[in-house]
Length: 267
Image 1 (cartoon, rainbow, N blue to C red):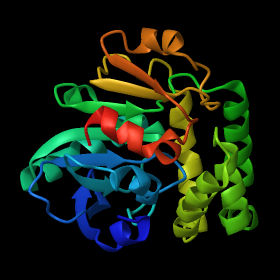
Image 2 (image 1 turned 90 degrees about the horizontal axis):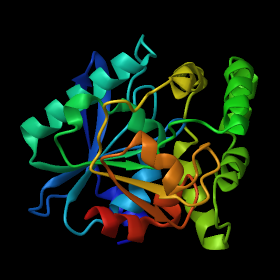
Image 3 (image 1 turned 30 degrees about the horizontal axis):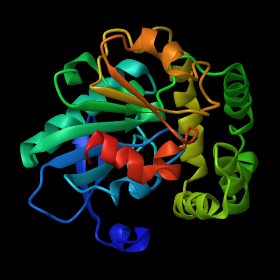
Image 4 (image 1 turned 90 degrees about the vertical axis):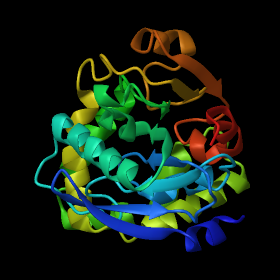
C-alpha cells in the first residue's frame, strides 16, 4: 500500500484528553488489535505514516500531539500535563479498541508515564540527554520563532524539507522523497502552533526524564545526532531492564527504516 492510499483510508476521530481536543487517525478495521503511535515535536502523525503502513500484525492508530497537526493547543506546556494527556489518550483508545502495542517516537517518548510500563510500550529514538548542538539550536529556535515572520519561514516547504534532510543518516533520493512527503503535509502548521511547540522545548532538558519508565523495547538509530547517547552502551543506563535494539538510520529511523522497525516491534 502506498503512503497516499494509506493516508486516504485514515479516519479522523476527535476526543478530549487532559482538556485538549485530540485528533487520532484510525486505519481501516483489519480484525487485528490496535497499535497506538505518537510522533515527535514539530511534526504530526504524518511522520509515522511510513512506519504505520508497514504494519502486518496490528491496526495502527496515529495521534497528533497537543498543539500539533489537528490536535488543539492546550494552556499547559509541562511534562506532568503531557503525561496526563497520554494517559487520557490511552484510556480513550482502550475503551473503544483492543490495544496491543504503544509506539512513541522522539519527543513522544517523554509523554510516557509509569502507568504505561505494564503494557507493550516501545520507544523509537528517545533522547534522554540532548546533544549540545541540538540544545543550542532549540534555544535559538525558541527565541526566533516567537516572531511570525520567522515562524512562517520555518514553515516554508523548501526550508522544512531541508530541516528534515539534516536529520537523515542516509540522504539518498528515496529518503529525501519521504521527507518531502512529510514536510508537504505538515506545511499547514500555523504560526501559533509553532509558538506553542517552542514552549514545549523546555521539556527536552528535563533531568532524569525516563526514571521509573520501563518500556518493553527501545530502538535507536545508529547515527542519531540529536542525542548525546548514540550507542547501545550509552543508552543502557537509562533503560537497564529494557530490550535494546539498534537499526540503520538517524533520528528519523522510523522514516528511513520503517520496514525493519515495524518487523522488530511486531507492528
